[in-house]
Amino acid sequence: MSIKKSPEEIKSIFEKYAAKEGDPNQLSKEELKLLIQSEFPSILKDSSTLDSLFKELDKNGDGEVSFEEFQALIKKIST
Ligand SMILES: [Ca+2]
Ligand SMILES: [Ca+2]
Image (cartoon, rainbow, N blue to C red):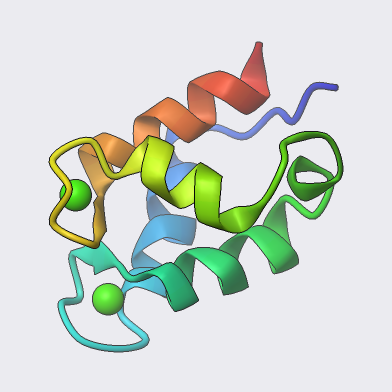
């Protein structure tokens, strides 16, 4: 599986969904869910559940995914 997106596209996708609620620079679990369902629906088919994915991405455990933490997802789906 390979999903090719330019860094600019990735950034604008992140910003679009992160701005929906709460901190505009952080993705809540709900925002991450919307982002994945709309932009990368194939991820959830082979990568267990949204809950475990969210935990995996939220490295510092603050309950939100920053743009930096989000990079791990991009790496995961682009390799
Ligand atoms: Ca947010
Ligand atoms: Ca975090």
